[in-house]
Length: 169
Picture 1: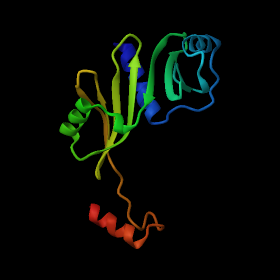
Picture 2 (picture 1 turned 45 degrees about the vertical axis):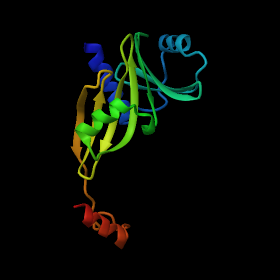
Picture 3 (picture 1 turned 120 degrees about the vertical axis):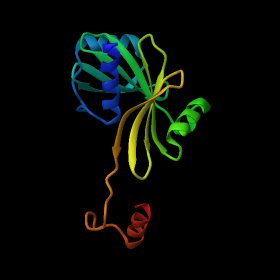
Picture 4 (picture 1 turned 180 degrees about the horizontal axis):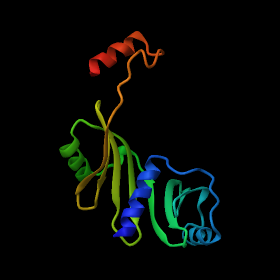
């Protein structure tokens, strides 16, 4: 259970682009990666605490893998187009977040477990990260209020954009 929580935190960090690109990877992690994803191209690494996140292309698909610094494979993940969200998941999201816009969709599969999907959703007031498991259960990971800009904060906003902002309030 602890591994799941740790991996989930790293997946959330990945969605939020945490970590520093270009981190060096240990030989143990490199060996594990090559054994599992030998034909991967365009491999980039970043390290978040004790987990290496590899971003790469495999079979024309952009993927992530998660390997801890002991060389243990934790799981994989991939962004996917929102148009490919299955109907059951669409229904679950619509029931809980009807009218919200799906900004990003990410599927992760932890070692020896069923896939889970995470989504970044937004409406005019809030942005949320939610997780939907294989059985259709939904969990709100994070929900925060969006910042509202006004023309004094951003002088580049045109008069039309200013009217749009007033309409949104």
